[in-house]
Amino acid sequence: MKKLVGFITSSYPNPNFTVDLVLSMAEAGMDIVELGVPFSDPVADGAVIEEASHEAIKAGFRFDDIFTISSKIAGTIDTYAMGYTNMFYRYGIENYIKKASQIGIKGTLIPDMPYEESVVYRDLQSQYGHKFVDFVAPTDNKERIKHILQHSSNFVYLVAYAGITGQATRTDLSQTIANIRQTTDTPVYLGFGVDENNAKKKAANVDGVIVGTAFVRDLLDKSLNFKEKLDKITKKTKMIKDQIC
Image (cartoon, rainbow, N blue to C red):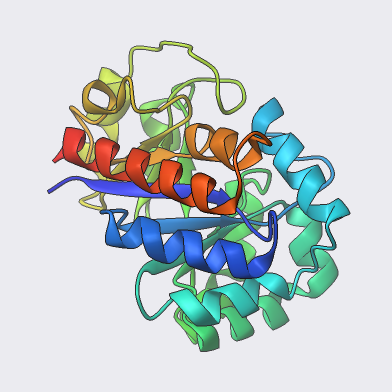
């Protein structure tokens, strides 16, 4: 069965709502959650997720919110954190990995950390049983993919196109997927531009999809109260999961 990974901006509108939302989405079929760490300059994200990050920061987000939220959901759903290098450096990479592993965060996605930099922390990841998720882009050739994925585990984040999240760009990924399959048996999840309208098609040749903007857009909808947001996003979660099964 194909997996649904859902990205949610943490602490917007508040940490307790994030916990309630993730648990509701998990009940509706979400297999893995990516807790977005709000950051002032989320370079890989489009306008929707960028706005949610800014709103969360204005609402008082603190880095430790990630641990607070994760401690309440990690026993129910596989939990990952997604953020940008600066945030983890400021907290301290080893401090972060140690605490994340203690709480039950299975791994971390850092899209602006090059592979060559991430491997510096491989021993720490092994020591604490925590994994930095590997990214593969359609611009990576076969040799580069073999290099990046030589120690892959958990899952591979396949970027659907060069650019930022939330766009409706199409790229032929068949050769990239073939190169990944020839290199590793690690599950491949496709992210960027996946929503309720295209999830089934996007999931066709991979092991799952990553959906972010489609959920966060509803999170930002000021015409909805908290319960309406939770209900709408949960319904969308079930719709997408049903499509990709």
